[in-house]
Image (cartoon, rainbow, N blue to C red; front, side):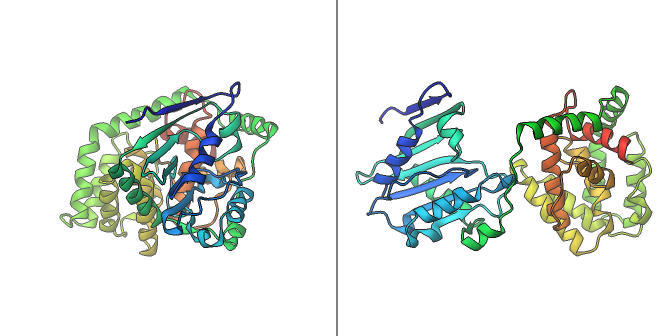
Length: 370
């Protein structure tokens, strides 16, 4: 096997990455490009005349609206018309983060260029990036094709109509970023007592975690009545666990269908971490469609207890906090709104000192905005 080639790029040295993209485009008889973000496309190199549309895919992500309309249009203009339907956006994949190009040439050699670089000008020129060009076996290349095919099923063909409707994020200028950081610090100040109390609640949850999950499983399987579940749940959460001391969900909760809620939680608990956001969104939407009223307050609290790094409470104080930061949530289904809210709060958490997870961020939010 030939030796792999490593690309270690900083702003001080010249990147060879673009040269190898052009090499792949000109020699490939099969070509597959995937990139989490597409913000630049200034490549005018023509595709190999021998490549067929069936052997070409170009898929990019749209998370956070970071891909730029101009770059997307440039790719459409670059592609021959018969290839344009193979230009796709990962429309239904949350967390689409690959950065790679795979190709096969006339000599039946298989290549992969994989690393940290998205299709951005900074990635090619100024960023600190690490990428590697390696050679693949035929079997590995077939695995790539199978993987690309699975992504394609969750993707959508890019058209001019899609570009027009695409919600592109507005880049923040440096002064806007500074203002955001100042606003965030003004809105939420670190409170040792509140944080300690929240950490104690999470410790208490760990003590009762098996008991609570067993109760949820019994309700999901129809082994106990709604009333029994409701009373037992309240008793467990009273053990210094509940994030909502007034049990906001309990006002209508006793009349709700807890079996459907518990079945949703049971499925979420069994889901792998890389698929969890999609399943949480799906389950919340199912509960919304079935008019289960406690899906927001109770479900989000139980998710926050089980996954404090990933999911927040879903209530008015959280919405008011985001509004104070001018972080608007697009109107959508309950499930999509909750996942977008979670993603924004995860992002905000990175800007907070001393706070370890969303559950701790939440206690500061609830204290100020309730």
